[in-house]
Image 1 (cartoon, helix red, strand yellow):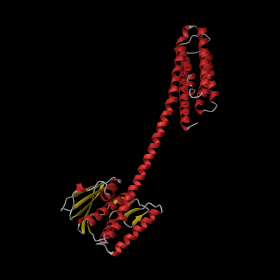
Image 2: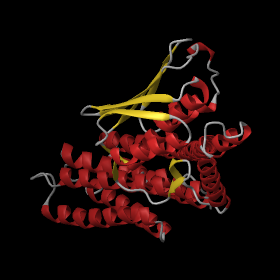
Image 3: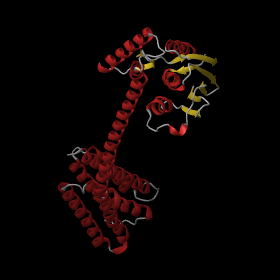
Length: 388
């Protein structure tokens, strides 16, 4: 039996039990109204109702369910015959109790029994017994009790239709849910793969590709010692990647594998300044650097800031940049400014890794943003924002 069929049968059994117990409780309330039945008849009805309710409770267990179905049929039919055949004058409450037991208390079996041949056989047998009890009662009492007996027939029809509807609808619904779950898992895996690909592309762009670019230009403006140190650190990164590690760099050559909860921005700005000074770019800091940031936000902020300074070093035509750090209650901002040759912002290619991925996308991953201002001959300003 498949998982969907098991879930369907469990739902049908639980529905049958709930409907049956509700009917038994309703019948008990009706029969317990003072003056409804003589005491001996009331006590006998209570015993039969207890047997009926216990058997209904066992339906959802699915163990020996055929036995409990038989108990339900026998106990329910006995309640009908016990109250109607003696020709005892019955009030509306007693007639309602009898109708509820026959129409719902016994007919609850139809909800559970429509999914298999053996269940259908038991259902037909139970319906036959109930009809026989109804016909016998009509023959003995006449048509004065026709209304509750018609109610019994209507209840059987309604609950059988409910069982058929549930048995067909539930599997379709579960299959759709299963299909949606599989699609969600596939989409999530694809998203995670794409995120790892983008992270790897940013990492290589900011480290190895930057070093290769320096080598391609013969290391102009960078000391031999600094170039050698950076190349060695990038080689260590490649070895870590080959061994399956996932480094989290704060700058090229600094691959921290154990994050901390919070870090002070001022502790790391000086290292960035020294790094770019060795590469021929003088960085002037303004504002406060004593700002606490979560480690993941700090890493993204510093990597984006480093990429901005790398762009100044490569493309601006000047050897000086200004970085102004400000913060308020919710946000930390860095404004990177140079007086270089500038460019037309509209000419930036959408898929360009340096700005689109290493700066904008990296900050957006931690809830931040980046804005770019530049024009030919007027220098460039980049504003970086991250949440605290």
